[in-house]
Image 1 (cartoon, one colour):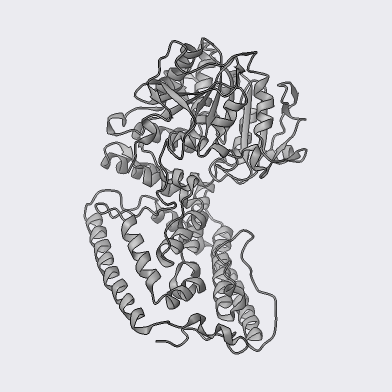
Image 2: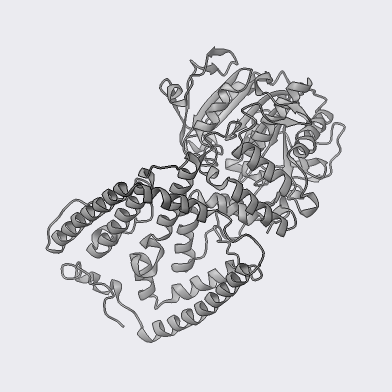
Amino acid sequence: MDGLPFPDPNAMSQPENENRYRIGDPAEFTRNMMQVGQQSQRLLADFVKRQTAKGSGGAGPLDPLNLTGTFTALLKSMAANPAVVMEAQFQLWRDYMGLWEQTAHRMLGGTSKPVVAPAAGDKRFKDKDWEENQIFDFIKQSYLLTANWMQETVAKVDGDLDIKTRKRIEFYTKQFADAIAPTNFVMTNPEVLRTTLQSNGENLVKGLNNLLEDLDGESGQLSIRQSADAFRIGENIATAPGKVVFRNALIELLQFDPTTEKVYEKPLLIFPPWINKFYILDLRPENSFIRWAVAQGYTVFVASWVNPDRELAQKGFQDYMRGGIFAALDAVRDATGVEKINTIGYCIGGTLLSATLAYMAATGDERVNSATFFAAQADFSEAGDLQVFIDDEQLESMRQTMEASGGVLEGKKMGTTFNMLRANDLIWSFVVSNYLLGKEPAPFDLLYWNSDTTRMPEATHLFYLREFYKNNALSQGKMTFDNVKLDLKKVKAPIYLQSAKEDHIAPFRSVYKSTRLFGGPVRFIIAGSGHIAGVINPPSAKKYQYWTNDAAGAGTDGKIKGPYPATVEEWQAGTVEHPGSWWGDWDAWLSKLSGKKIAARVPGDGKLKVLGDAPGTYVKVKAG
């Protein structure tokens, strides 16, 4: 029991490492392993019971991701292309021979370059023993060879696979490769193995307790904690001072207190995504976009969307337009006396705003003075990995799931989908830390927000997935609201498009397509980082960068300098890189559209009376 589970080639030359992979107290280790084993057997039995019930008529579809159809298509194509498969197998065999040769050379005391190395930014193999210990180095390289082989092989298979099916195959193959990584198992992860032996298995006991805490007792659904529950909305997160000045079934409208004596005449109205809560724009004072915008002299309003229950299940996209955007525009007009309002739409909030602008243009409604889009898409032809979840079979499975839940999609299910886009960072790293190393999650405001999920009403969510992601109807002029055809070319209001270089949810290539959809002056920029950090990047942080090309589209002065190229790659060829935050660029653009400076407005001074303090009540409603 107290011997080395693996031969340690370093031990002969480095005696101080001899005890790194030895059990501290065999008796204590045995007791802990028995406890883990007994509890694990009960968990496994419960899992089998639930799966059996599910397979014999329990709630929910058996194959919600349409994996059967996806990989059946792959097998058919592989069978039709045996030469590709045989060539791939030979290449894998040849790579393994090279790995064995390299490992044997190291075992004999020599040095050699690795056959394969982790991709840049892969954090899974950061423990030094992945390089210094020949055994773990062999495990690492063996895994990387196999994972790369799987992904490259499915990418090379031709046949009758359409583009969407091919993307699904490649995505799910990567998910499988990530799941079987040696970092995810006790015996093949050097850090976990050392911790297990040195703590006599105490880490696994604590990890099992963490797992039990994360399991829903009724449904058996696992919700991996990404952050300690150390935050209280309105107390140490979402604390920008303001008031609730309007409320209906879909939104609470927040107006924030001014911090300058003078403000711009035209107010700013923000529509966050209802897939998440608005306080991503107000996490902490130092990274709060809301506080920063107020400090620049804008009168800031934010729509805080309701966390819908089954009573709102049949609220559709047009209801969100009328009860959300139209209601908020009317309320801001009543609060300020200003008819034309600057707006921001973030993610799906921006998609709704795009469609609404087209409807308003068609009906002669000119209440929107300008529109800014944070990581928001209107053309979904290159909408990234989320498209793999959109086909007829999966939409029908989702409909059944929502029907079984009373007409809403529970927030945890949507959160899991987004986490899958970055599985190593947002799923497997926490499996290792929480359940294998037995650590408690650290308090992290961004990850707390990420876990504070919201429900999706059935009618709105299915319309969004079907008409935008699947049919791409808005960009093609095939969408109607109330029998009014939506044509983005009729939108003449000034537009600011923010995208992010590493955004997996709204890829910059997808956002760029909107430069050629709107009919007015458009300014487009690419920021560093991703869907969240690319947006929430205050100037004081001095992080990342952004790129502009003032030869195309509108400058910060609003004047059109030239047409946008057909592709984003052509646009990128003429860009200038700027260090730090893009917020200043946006402020330079919006300030020229915001009118004169007037005395600061205080919530409740206009026609709307104060209903309560920010952040309001809707944001505090928890979802399942």
